[in-house]
Image (cartoon, rainbow, N blue to C red; front, side, top):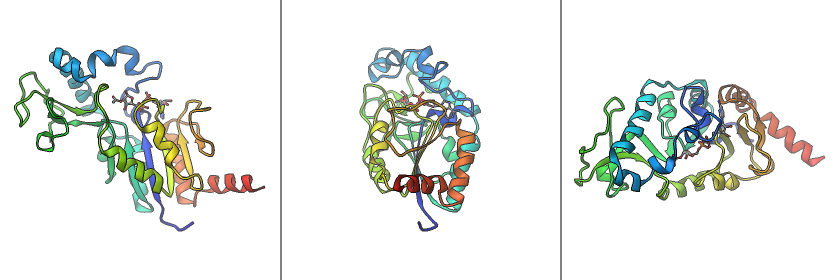
Length: 249
Ligand code: OAD
């Protein structure tokens, strides 16, 4: 295996948990506290903009005080020895703040706003300071109500899914961190990574039956799991080599 590899990370809420941001489906997760169908749909925004915007403003405030953790930082630091792409389901910007240069957001970004009439209209998507609430009456360039540039439950993922699929197929090393693989395209992406390349899963949960065979499961929280993975990446992925040798016996 040549020294410099293209590592593709697929990350979810678990990588930001140690930064103090809630996951969704864990026992203390956000979707155990609120019903996403009441707050995270385009129809809810249309019917009750105050309530939906207040929910997202609260999440934007939480993000303002959150900081990248060591797991985000290790992902970014690996760019020194490998090529790294991050595909994330997270709407936070902690990968970027940690220094990652190539981050694909499958579910949008809390730091941006867009048009509620035409969310993919590029001329309406813009940065919006996290400290500033999005208010009913704030208008996009097309005159419609501003909304957070995140994917709602009654919307389809965008073209970035195709880009993500291509990257997963081409990865020299594929690493899944902190996602239950429950929704959207993420459960399909893990099947696209090649079976003859090192594939790792970092998540404290049991994944029996939820991940294809051949993934090396580091059953740790993100920070400890990424410390272990960094050693793998620095040493030529020894766990994968041992795994492949074992298979050959
Ligand atoms: P989930 O809440 O579904 O899953 C979180 C995963 O993180 C679980 O597998 C946990 O075991 C794991 N986890 C918890 N704490 C961790 C830690 N400290 N370190 C590492 N892993 C940890 O979150 P996602 O899979 O990211 O979409 O959810 C995917 C999407 O569902 C979200 O992007 C969001 C939600 O609906 C939208 O809002 C469109």
